[in-house]
Length: 221
Image (cartoon, rainbow, N blue to C red):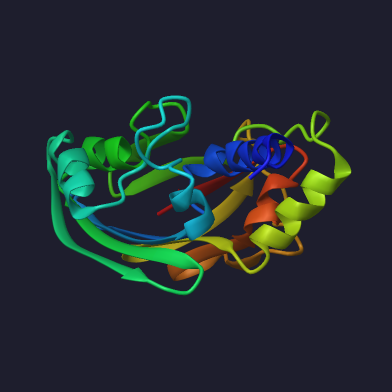
């Protein structure tokens, strides 16, 4: 790989690494009456990312848990969290990892979703509550990347989505926000279930990156 091409790949990876190095993500949050619950997560990591060594051992890029040992180490750092199951399957283009983690209370849930405490918040009153997740706090600045790179990104990300569902013991509602937490209409290119026993939101990874004011999800019950 020549230097120019390598530089382009690094820029491409740096943008995808903004979303925890995942190319595709499906997250299901289940919550019980007492605040305990279960996280079920499926995520796809492009072999391109993996083969370039961006997932482990590169101090300039954020690392994510990939192996079962990684996940055991990660979960063990969170009081009240327990790794229930782990599996990894190698497909043609991606490594697909499936993880189920139980959490015993709100603090364990927040620590699992956002170890740095910058993009999540949870509040409760009696049997009602609100969980805010900020997926993208501000628009991605494409100005420093040439058009050829942006087009490559769009081709590379085609067919990869970010999907999040939430369910509790009673009906919930989903509200879409911008990166600052202000309520906005759901994006036309997103698939949503805004109320019911299980609410959900799904959007293409590049559609997420293209949102003008960032993007957040608010679950209330």
